[in-house]
Length: 304
Image (cartoon, rainbow, N blue to C red; front, side):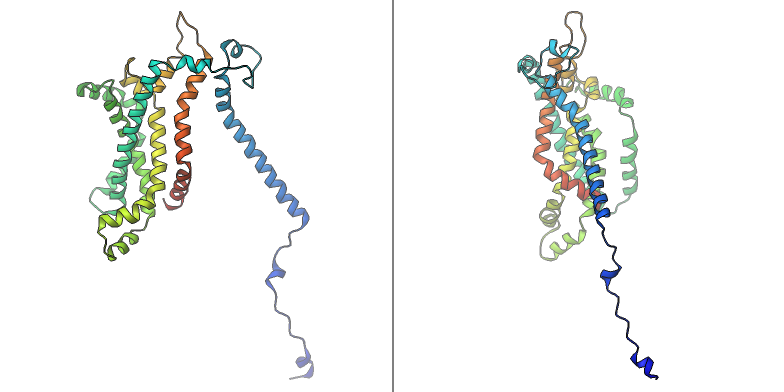
């Protein structure tokens, strides 16, 4: 070997830091500008989304003369709660009781049936399983308006017209299919091996399911319950067909404030106050369960 070859310097190993892109001040400013741009856009979208709710609450505390003027009033200075006192009467309390009863019954049994069905679909292999899943999807494609006549005749023959139980049955039948499909993703996302490991430790299948699987499914149950609650609380068309004027849900009660009559014009202040009252239970319910609901939706997105 020649002396020049022996004296040749050995090239230094390349360092990973040398291959990394250098973040220049210009690039850093560009990234910060993009972040500010997206933040401003998000704020604008939020304002557009929140403004109708704000306008409803603001208008509920203003008089009809103020609302009918050409100059908009953005702050309820000088307003009062007279519109709320005007809409809270005996018919409101009756409608509130019917809506709460129907919603609680429908949500409870909807979650119960959907939970059992989703567990059966996800954990067991049986004949007709694929057909059952396809039937759930097909039911979701049926327009609700096409079922009104059949639903009315069925409730009439059963003597359940204008009845809390009859309306609850229709709501359960309408909401269960999608809830089954929604819960199926959560149940599938919980590994069956967890139950098997618990059974190896001495638990029965039922005990393993109740102690291991069910707590992990709690966020999914809350998210599905919120969906079922909103569907039942805000539903209008089925209640309009089944219920009469004496037994009304809150959406039907709210409709009475916007119906024109020869003797009484629409009082938009009362309409806004009634709309705010109808929205309050939904907001309270969402505030209570929003933590569980957020984690449930995220879990369903990655496990479904």
